[in-house]
Structure formats: C-alpha cells, structure tokens
Image 1 (spheres, rainbow, N blue to C red):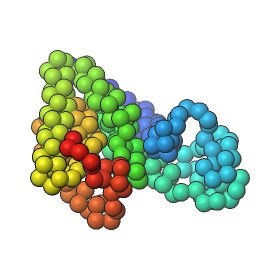
Image 2 (cartoon, rainbow, N blue to C red):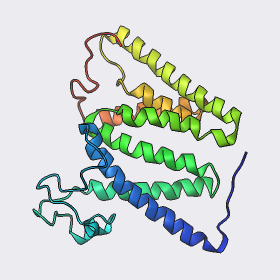
Image 3 (cartoon, rainbow, N blue to C red):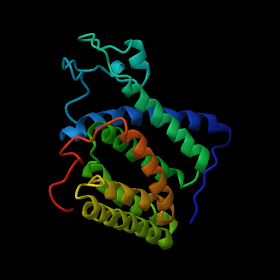
Length: 238
C-alpha cells in the first residue's frame, strides 16, 4: 500500500515546517544525548545549565537562535555552551529536509524521519561514551518492524528478517572475533544497532552498512581509544 500527499501551493510552508520541526526535535535530542548515558530522566527536571544549574527560560530554549543570541554562553554563569547543541539541531533539521528530498510527501518519509530521530543521538552518544543504549536500540528495532505494517505483510516480513539477519550476523562476528583475538572485536551494542538498521532498511542493505561502518570505524578509531568497560577488552567470551 502506498500513501502520498501533495501539498501543492502550500508546499514551501510544509517544507519550512518540517525544517523547524527538525530543529525542535534536534533540541530535544540534545537532552537525550546528555542524559540517557547517565541514566537520567529526559522529562524532568527541565533544561538547565550543566555547570551552574541555571534553569533555562523558554526564550533560552529556541533552537539555534537562543545559542546565537546568548553568544554561546550561559546567561547565569557566562560559561561557554558547547556548539554541539547547535550542530545537533541543524543536523537534524537538514536531515529531515534530505529525507523529504529523497521520499517526497509519501509514507516512506515517516520511517525515514524516525530513523533520523534514532540515529542522531546514537551517533553522538557512541562518539562520546562508546555505548549504544538499549533504551534507544531496542525500541528502535520494534519501531522499524511496526512502521512497516502499513506497507503490508511482505514489508513486515522484510523488516523482521532484516533485524534478525543483522543481529545474528554481527553476533557471529562478535563470537568469531573473540575466539580469534581473545578480546572484544566488536562493541556489545553493535549487533543491536545493525538489527535496528536492518529493520528499517531491510536485509539487502546490510552489506553496504557493513562496508561503510567498517570504514567509518577505522577512521574514528584512529583518533580515540575505546575506554575500558564500555566496549573495551572483555573478560569472557560473549
């Protein structure tokens, strides 16, 4: 089943709305990136400066504009606010527009936006903490399968197969890597991330994902040592 919607004359307004929505979601994802690795609630307390505890007013929470207006500094303690916050907001907004460019106003746009919603925080959390939280990957796998339902039983089967093949393939690689090198060869959360991608993109995409993830990992891995206890040397076979 295919769903399409043509905004017509109002399309520029819809495009602007989608971009602003992406900025706002990016602002929320900053909270996810900061709090989920610490096991904190993403709902309470409200946004505040991590250095002095200054509670942000609504006008200090406007994506991009507030950071620019405050000149990248907290209004309470004048300490610098990381430009990562603006980066995440703009990245999410631009990725939303890229998804629109690729899928137009069709149902396929919905799972694409949800995938962006999941991958942006997972990327930044992994870069900083070397972890892939189950609180994002497991619901993401379920979302990939559920969002395939409107496209029919065949799409649901493909999503489920993609998740299963991704998980099992990386689980096997994880085990073989341990046996061959006597240490952790893959991060413990990698197989769940690949299962998530398989659920959204299907099993046929996994070969390309494996190639590009290996390339990206080799580049990033040269500049950062994996911390012990967060994907470093394991004590027993997985």
